[in-house]
Length: 486
Image (cartoon, rainbow, N blue to C red; front, side, top):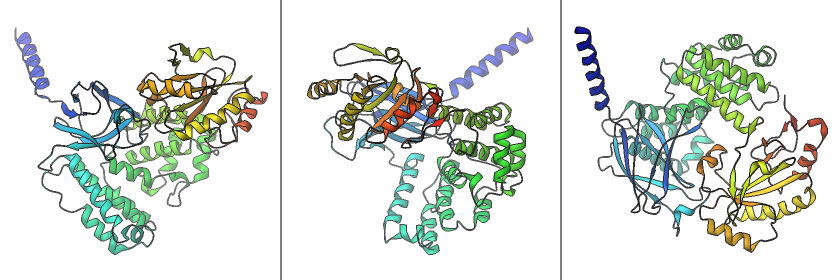
């Protein structure tokens, strides 16, 4: 009987705790986008910057929406309505009232493509106490200071300690009561970015001032901005004590994680196990596209680290870096899309077989994209037997595409509409235009983004057709040098 009673008590306690935990709630207004979906993303980690969808809601006919999120720590969010995007900082278990505005006039803002104008998040915060309000105010103050009295040049080009001290007073000053740990950390590392610039020759002093701690604020955007900046290509940095040849040889010849961490430990700055692993993930990410390093071994090392690390944040970082790198290069098959043209006929990726595929993404109001289409027309005539050209419209309003196709009948390759599928957009990072990619005959992405038609695409195509490459090549954006995959 006692066991039954004890179990019952545990159930009651569990239920009461779950009911006591509050979700983070965002009540918002987007009057310009009735009956549209609003999507909410966050970075899964702030080293790889992989975006993940964490919530969505249908905006009502009168422009209202409500989103509830299960958050355990302060988080930087990105709101997306079609191609419009705005950011927001939230804290767990809080409730916010926001609305969106624009700093430019537009007849139909929800139809804007490829983030032509920013969407501004406005919060109802009369007491000026929210994390978002404080960070916005701090950012505005920094911007105002840098643009006044030539202060930007004084700090960046003339290393004025006096101006730096004035900036420090602004950043580290009094920003009201109730400042959270997140905001205090944000202040410190916002200033650290400027301190590192002006005192770049005192790297040891800067390091021990900002990294000589047991805690590393991997969820804080300012801390991670500073971390990523300080350790940018650290394996090749003058401030690094890591033997670059030894580091490279271990990666290329052995792919031995233990030896790699050991050789990094010879750098006095990297004695801390947590920091050493973070820096290794960062360096492996940075060296992936460096010709001196074996890219396959880098992926293998990242995967091994994800399995052996004691730190959950590091496991996530390593796996996300792998995912981000694989999204950029070989071995990534394109989603087998099914898109429609203006006549309603469906076209599948699998319809294009035995040819290379050049895919252009465009909108009908993108003048550069339309100019590229004239270049594509010449390429299509030249390579009609080997390359299939396809254009995919990112216009939210499909009527625009209908009028465009009728206006330009000379563009006689398949012109499709993305079907307002924003998961497709996120998968390939289609944030700005013009944009293109090249696929091999099996649907593998071999260049993303690919050079545009006004580049040396002819040379690239000719290289693609050479038998010695066996369709296993990739090239960097804007670079006509073809590289065989290992």
